[in-house]
Image (tube, rainbow, N blue to C red; front, top):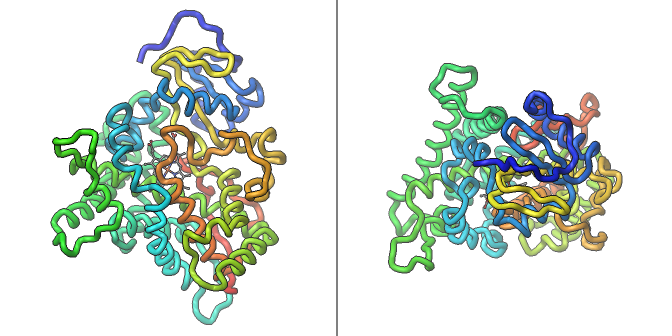
Length: 463
Ligand code: HEM
């Protein structure tokens, strides 16, 4: 992509000596801290020159919406980010652009509409019951639980059931490790101009090859089983069945379903994007509930009153207002995707007072927006009341755990339903507490998603 070289007025930003290399190093060492300091030093739109790149960061809801919503067609996702992700996701919804993305989105969106997603609630509840029921061994009142492993296994079970009508069994551990390995690699490779070939004997490459092999094999196994299954008995109501059935009306006449390769790539995206993110949100939520017993009690009382001991359903969500607010506030403090994929301007754009020339790069960082005291007073404090139904409205674009605009997360209703059902069922069964040696909240570590460094352990006491 050509970058514009004619002189254009630029917003303020840090000095960029040595082609910006020291800045690039700071970014790769502490991405979120670095970007947050940029906002503190230079305001809501900043500029820096990194090698050949003209890079902007935007930090106010209005400016973020100018990029992601109002002028969405002036931007594509950053090619290097796409290159790195395409190794794991192929040409799926997350990595395509233009007409290919439009077609995929048109075909797949109905499968993620709230009414369709509500049909998965039973499967989500089954997965949660199975994961939660026996956490504390018989005869004991409480147990120390590895919450990382619990939430990852649970959300993986949900995605396997909804995607393939399958269950997380032995493959689950490997698939979860593989997802983590690819996340760590993606984070490192984003800062390299090109990805060294995977066959090179470089540190970590063997592990990456294993991770890719593991996930491709998992997805291929399920697709092959479905394509060779007896149609009379094959599942008809999971996401794979939906993907096999879709046809593009706009192209009448042609066989306009998804090809085998497209099916594979979409499954890779849904499998990885669809479990790691929800697990991350539930992890931080669990820690915050353990740290704030009063807020947790209020959520538990609400759950008891609305559900009276039965399993939750989608129809209960509007009445689980406080519980929903605790989840939203957890995703504010710890957005599972704290930095969106950067965008490349393909046409000149006007962002606030500044013209962003075609060819420029724009970074969007929910982490910084979510910790801005202008929209969230006392931003480090866990205050679910910011998100209850009677709370004053937030500026649109200030809270964006799922992104916004045409490329908003297609799974947002799925994720909110899944997380609310799981959270309600967890509070029906257990009280969470921080163990005495773990008073300090774990640091957040960015590996595409924002995980607690060193994992998370909590005491679960049976109610
Ligand atoms: C708490 C859970 C989740 C969070 C926080 C989350 C977050 C996000 C974000 C921020 C984006 C946009 C990235 C950008 O603009 O650069 C995104 C896109 C996407 N997400 Fe999610 N996600 C979650 C759950 C899910 C689930 C459950 C699925 C599918 C089952 C899913 C599938 C996708 C897909 C396919 C895209 C690409 C959409 C497109 O580009 O058209 N996500 N997600």
